Image (cartoon, rainbow over all chains, first blue to last red; front, side, top):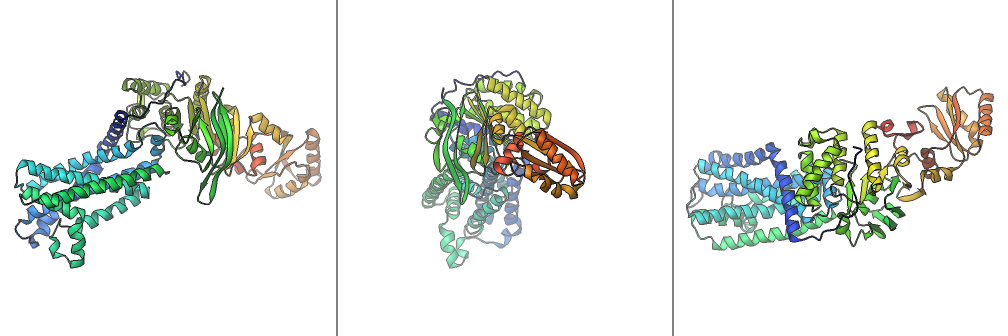
Length: 270
Length: 329
């Protein structure tokens, strides 16, 4: 340790360009992907949870649920797809809270990197994990009798919409993780929006079976709109109306929670 | 030559707590300045202000000639920060950690790969470079953390309690390493609770207490501030401690420190042998049994106590005269 070859000065502040910012995002994403790969148990759990929900509603409860004009398996599985990306996003909240607590955020914030890259790299890595989980659940769905009925283009569009919703929502989880700063609390807090949006939606049962006061919420909330659009894309029904609403919701959630998360990150002093 | 770090009247509040109050000092390029103070003195808060992690409520600070508020991003290219808690990623390997930091310093890939390899060799981590950090010992993590802060070859380095919790050998290695860095022109601001560390490494010392600069100067200047000597009395029986303290209280030039663990009284005094004899006579006349009696030059610990009214490091009350990291571990 005694033979040092460090010549200090000469360091120059390089102006931050878009290219460097993208490179920063790439570096952070890679770091988080390595973390995901090295904690396979977390990836496993984010697949087990939607698997259980899927099997539960396909085989245990599904027999008692009738929906007009559709096999229940084809009704419920697109909803589970959405649940798979929602549950995956929860780890965004957990991971950010962990980073804040570990103090590694201080190191990143003391570097000349583009600061938003820390959050973008987090959500992008989690997006990759969500896609893996979604691929597995789609395979499982096909295994238990779910079928795509429209052309490949529309079905891919449906899958893309699910992924877009999951990504937009990962910024909600990012905001939660940055706001609560404590991993355990983050995990608990992140379950809430998932529960409300998933269960009080058209994912599992038609909204028309709910009491009137709840219908108003359930009919218009983002998860219902997105699931309806996805179902229509998979089944070949009229998708246009739900589709643009879902796209607006995704864009809105993304924009609002991106701004909130960036602001929270700026102030983060864990 | 401009100061590498220049702090002017920095004040920072957290709610109702005044974390930093009108703090001013400067560090010349190529010097080491030690921020000395107990937990909660504001050391870390000040480091956070200077490393652009936290914005002060008022005052000005310049690092490498740049304003921490206006030129925050430019400063980040010119500083390195190693934290009290080794802020490296547990699940990444040592090399992956260093390369990521290099990338985020916006170094070219070839450059940061070379420097990561260099740093691993320099920190004796070559063998463990491709293992995940979670398999590292505390000392290895600290070395990796320091290596990470140096990947950008920063002219100004901030070390927040760099040796807290390290064993003496690793601590000495780090001291040597910091000394070498400074010899090559790096400016270092480090925080510490250990007098020995400040005395060993730093040209200048700023004593921070409850957010204020309680004193600043070189180690010798601070000792001269106290003046005189320190009388140490160790009694055989604990019961005699208070009695002995009151017997010699007249000789004191500052309040005494009682160590109930070692049955020892430490007393700043003016004068030398005459005071020692007077103390010996008074104690002997009163029949106090003595284990030890002596007079010595003040240590930085005594200075700290005199300035702030309480010891620097936790556990000082039960410690010995000089407080090395291992004594507190």
